[in-house]
Image 1 (cartoon, rainbow, N blue to C red):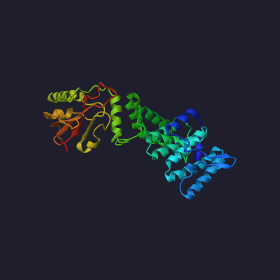
Image 2: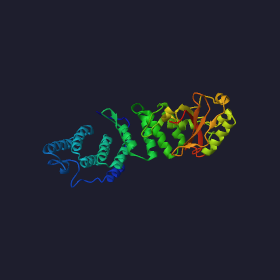
Image 3: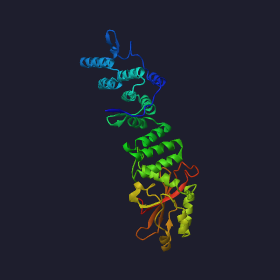
Image 4: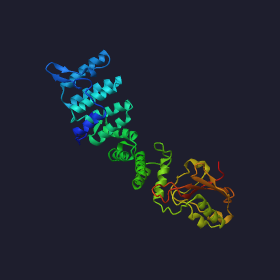
Length: 372
């Protein structure tokens, strides 16, 4: 079943003309693209009668019926039958020309959004994805919504658009539409995350942080989103860092390591803990390495004071630098008889919202035990 949304939005004939010209609409050989009634009956453009003998007979009958009915609801059922034949034949060009003819002849038809949707789908099948995106965009911005077999045509068009359009400003609009209009029909978590990504691409970080914050309330640790392996940790890092003082970072990993070593040499736990990150700091064993970066919001719940009072803490002279150059490990030992070795984990700060902080270094956590 197909239902009209109560809100009807008019689109200008000029707008339709632009779209028709964009896809190279023509009259398809000679004569009218649609059947017309004249004194001798129905005249049908032979271009549209295509296929097997049975299909040609069916198309002839359908075009005759179409010409005999002026009510848009009655025409809709006939148009769908004609479109179904062209789709089964994979005659996408004929389908596009047929539907464009309807748009040209009936610019105020209540079901033009549906016909545009079929045109967009046909272009997708032909591999003309940018053209399909233009049609989907035209539907959601200029036409009233329709419900097709229980699904909103705007919802389906928006779902296509977020996969077809790369421009971040347009993507922001699409995600905002999905969230404001279709909350009950979409997965809000990934939608908020991708909205945050779109705002981030525009450099609108306050809006991005708000979107990431909403994502966190609709997600859980370990969740990935559209190619981002651990989207939850990524968003948690940015949000917690945004809400923190960000006053513990160092200009270089060497400066950070010198400060940490100096505090260890002095046996000064209070000074040492001034250097640890106060957002997303973690302590864990190497077995949990997959969730190490950014997992576990907040401060470490332990104190090094008791450990440093028992014995002198030693450290390696050199850092272990990761191949990507964004992480470093300082091996330390002497902490506890049962778990003497701790690796201090340093990482480069990823926080584009604050250029003064982005790229600096922080002491982000501790791995217990020897490296695996």
